[in-house]
Amino acid sequence: MTLERLNDLADAWGGDLRRWPEADRRVAERLLASDLAARAVLDRALSLDGLLAASPPPWPSAALRNQVIAAAAQAGLRPRPARRFWLDRLVLASGAGWAAAACAGIVAGMSLTSHLTADVQADAVLYQATLAGIDDTEVLG
Image (cartoon, rainbow, N blue to C red; front, side, top):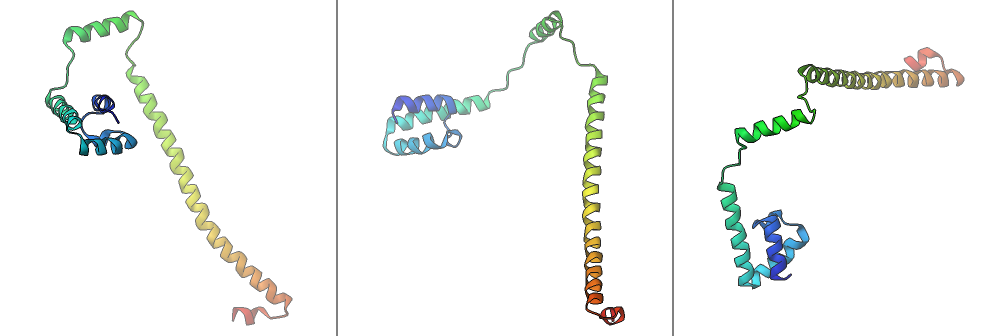
């Protein structure tokens, strides 16, 4: 890895090597261990990261906000009506209801199947016993 490539990566990903792509990180760690100029590039990126983290997030001015709203209205874009929000909620709730009903059906079906399987097995034992000529009272015993 060259110093130019290290500088490009530091500009793109910052000074924290944990954010870098895995392959580039391993190569950069080897270069940083042996080259002071590479370490200076990374230190510069770390100090820039600190300045960016300490700065407040930008807030748009009221004039810019009004300009964006006016441009959206001029383009024919309208805010979404409130009833659409409730319609979306209703669709989501009904979908959740169907999913819950499906899960309850699966659970009920599985629990009934285990009981039915036991009954079928008991019937099979009784049937085989009658074929062998054994009386039901001997089997149920």
